[in-house]
Length: 362
Image 1: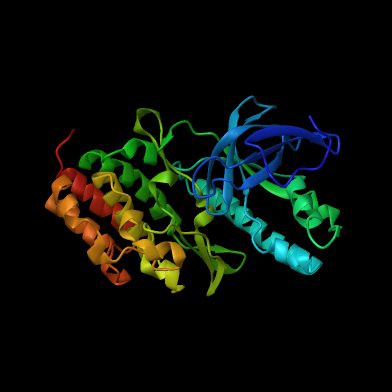
Image 2: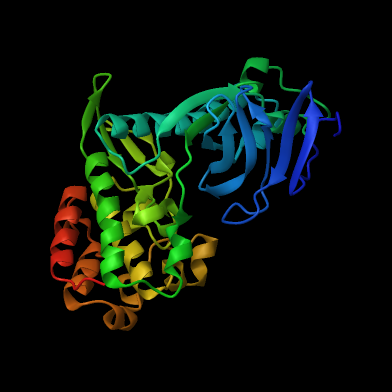
């Protein structure tokens, strides 16, 4: 192991020593963040041992680890992107750096609060939020030292307090790996019935700290659905939720091109009907085996529409894989007009359960 600070170019997975401790320097191996570097302590807070990469999406990174106290397997989540921080470092704007880092970390704090809220409401379709710890992130030092002729950011407290959310390691495979060329209609509806039960709990407003909390999951897609043993279903990555505090947006969250409704991109106020759209796009993918991003067109990658135009969906393919009632449900979910979609998670549950009653067991 080397004793030098992290290099700019990260290895696939390389352990090194720094400040008397062991760290891992690696790159995201696949997904939308493929190639992005990250650095993490080998033993977070001297309790959670980092083992290997699990997944990444939006601004989050998930790693597999082990709780050295309980010997339980865990998932470790942290923020991955440091967008804008290099610009602040170039101008030596310490307040800008602090503000941007704090904003990024609030996303993880909000995710933990949402998970605790759902668990307190008896929701079992998400991982348990086991712990929340802080540790050193040498990657931040690298970002600052590489700018402005050796200038070094001096806020040691901020540099040494990267946030990490420790979650239950639920066994299973992402739904993306299960879909392949398409899934039976009844199986698809059964999986989404479980997901919509979580959405129904999430959509219930709550009063916290004198303000009303309203949540929209916003980023439903097969990558965020875990299929476990005996067909158990769990919803992952609550960091993409849109949180509204009273009339103020507290967390913009994240969305995925192709799966998201038009209002995610336009900045319009989001209601639970946005999640109805993502249920429709996810169900379309499950039944047809075709990813929604296939229908976006080449302009999506250069700032074009991130939502599929209604006419561009492969409706003939859907007609080959689903009953008329299910087709109509998907069409209503994918309406560009929010008021034409199912109103919220409870409405989605009711409609999917009705569809299941009319489908033959497989």
